[in-house]
Image (cartoon, rainbow, N blue to C red; front, side, top):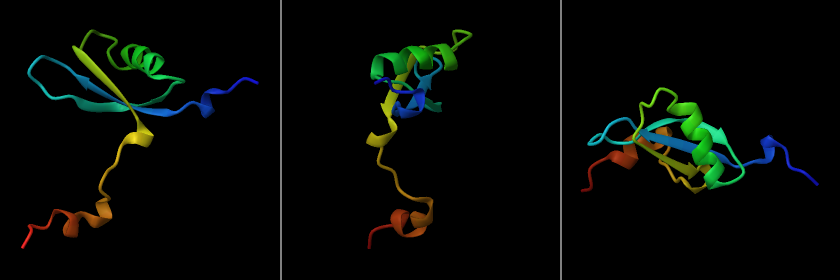
Amino acid sequence: MTTSRSDWPLWEVFVRSRRGLSHTHAGSLHAPDAEMALRNARDLYTRRSEGVSIWVVPSAEITASSPDEKDPFFAPAA
């Protein structure tokens, strides 16, 4: 049984363009594992050698606040 690319997990890609700068979200891609995600991210998001560091993170492992909860979530604590 073979798996298709649509069955591969989704990865979020963060690229740091120069030393001293923060990583920024560059996009997403599907890959079967972290090593392949890193290689594909390099090929897709740093074609002109604009990156010095790449992070790939499984999308399923990211926990984020919801934009709908912006006001109560970011309200100062009493």
